[in-house]
Image 1 (cartoon, rainbow, N blue to C red):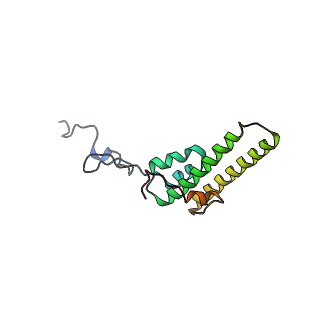
Image 2 (tube, rainbow, N blue to C red):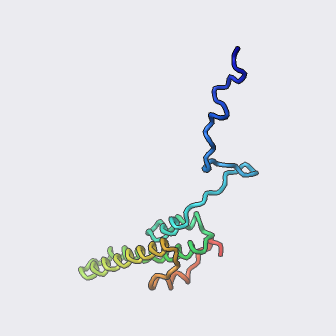
Image 3 (cartoon, helix red, strand yellow):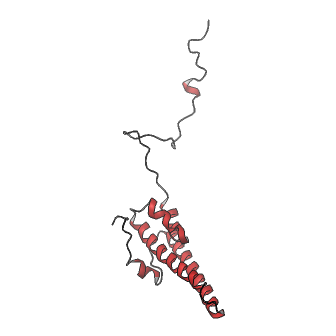
Length: 139
């Protein structure tokens, strides 16, 4: 006499559903993805990568703080890089090198502040960052 249930996979043999399983909402849409805020804030201080958090997590006030400082830092890096193409003199090369070291140091200080969870204004850059606003970022 064959067994009543011929299904090879019994309910007890199914693996448990993990907590990372995707659950659709009531309107059958995928939930929004939540990115780690610290990672996005760190991107703010990595040169041109400051654009990533602008488009992903633009509604977080702490992240806005770091994005604005990262933007000013990026502009300073671009201007310093453009100076390198001007009539190159030895003294100008030294100044450009020192400025780039300052920008790298400011980036590292900003990343350190992100890791510690602090909103600390960077010297000079912080003052300029308070004066800018991105139009598509909600206030």
